[in-house]
Image 1 (tube, rainbow, N blue to C red):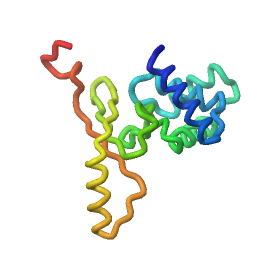
Image 2: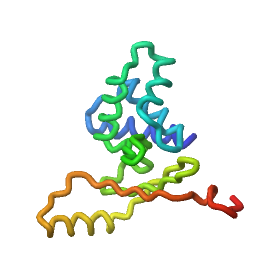
Image 3: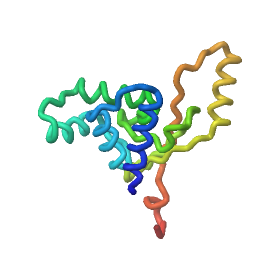
Length: 149
């Protein structure tokens, strides 16, 4: 079973448990993102979807993305205005993204202590954190000069 299939099964189960609809369009959008391995922009998704669903329009994709984000199945890469599948949808805390600037590979980290420390610091400053995005950009192991991977 591929990683994308595993994510789709987890998503189906999670949506069923929460009592929300995992429609064929939502499923396909998640599948396209999961198969990509890096960030995928909404209009790239639309291009791929429109070959399969003639009625696919930007609102269709954005509604699906909004749903997938709300359910914790997809993360938005703020710096690229792109989307990546959540590698650990059952994880409810913050996350961090490692983004390769050369190949676009994205890896998700779950360093809860960092998220918790930042939220606590913000709270001490009287700030209520509603969303936290931490993106680290650089070169993955395969793209670093002199790498033998």
